[in-house]
Length: 137
Image (cartoon, rainbow, N blue to C red; front, side, top):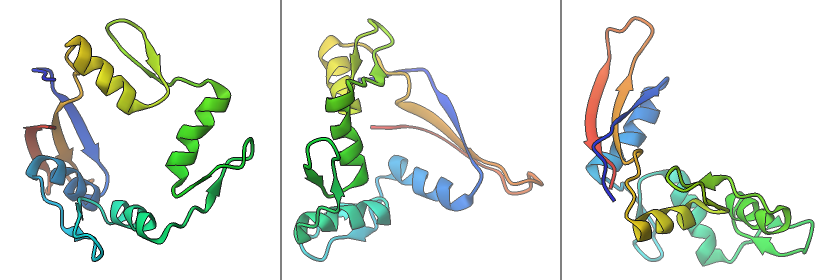
């Protein structure tokens, strides 16, 4: 998957830019003490920790299945609603999960124009603007 098209990212908080920059640098400063897996964001580490505790605090009101994260529950709910919010720009085929769209794009060889980006942080006075051009991988 590749693309020569770039998109621009704006951040209203420097912390959001720093987090985003880790997608370019590959930095993963948050480590799981149980299995040593590393993460770019603390929130992702916290979500991962539920895999060790077995906690499943999010339950489906339709079928009572339980999930460790709210996002997994939202994805599951699409099996009941039929929602398919991720669609291929080339062929209009839609998917319930973004991972399924990515597999489709890789399989069909289409480029995905969100893989290259330029990230910009602009404060109100523009004195501290940061610019980065790179590729997501």
